[in-house]
Image 1 (cartoon, helix red, strand yellow):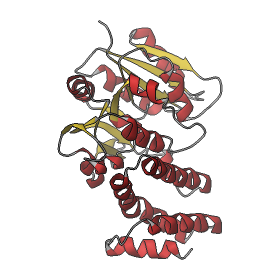
Image 2: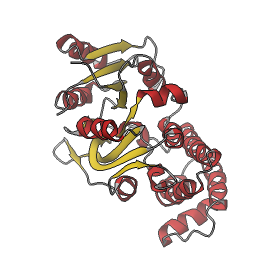
Image 3: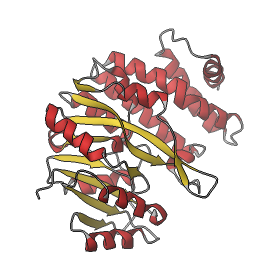
Image 4: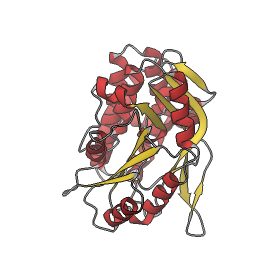
Length: 317
């Protein structure tokens, strides 16, 4: 069987979760996939688990980095190896839902669009020591409901809120002709790339199906759980700013406005909570500068009171 899609699976020290990620690939209702597993110089058994998967199933290919290079570099390593018409991503601590590839690849194949995006939910620790999938959050629903075929950012600006790499399957040609690559050495490396995909695609499709369960690790090691660290905050704000710059350069004013509204409503309030008692003044100063710049773009936006209070506080720092 000729493979239709390559799934890129990067991992660093995720031995506790990688088996579930690989099992979710094996459980796909669409079986014409291959996967490139990139072990980013893990210090645990991640690399051994990847090797065992490849020894058992020739759809898996393994690459080992000799030194840790980060998530963006791991994805770029695998992109150079893609030989299939379509490509998607799965972080090695997350899980695909069983029909994810069937729905995403099938949709793009039928429509002729450059990529398709689907919904996702968060996996959070439960009281029994496992993980429980949550519900589709409002900003995810806004990007992925209702189903659309052959749409664009001009027609569907709220799609710009779906900024994760692993909720999409795209034509490999989009990456080749667009020269798309992930930033390296940065956290939140997929935000800018997502906006580049939206602005460079001829058209994209939207499906409301949940395609990925995204894990928030119980041990607190997920990057999204480290926003209180100043270097992580800097990468985060740089990614948010960079994504908006991509939209601005493409003349996508409605999508940029939708993105500003979402950042102010969703991203900013938790950062303000962290900043209030943060030991480093630089944290507050940099968040304040970002907030003032963002607010200048808000154009009279009316925010819910708790959000407005957070924004007002940050603008004073």
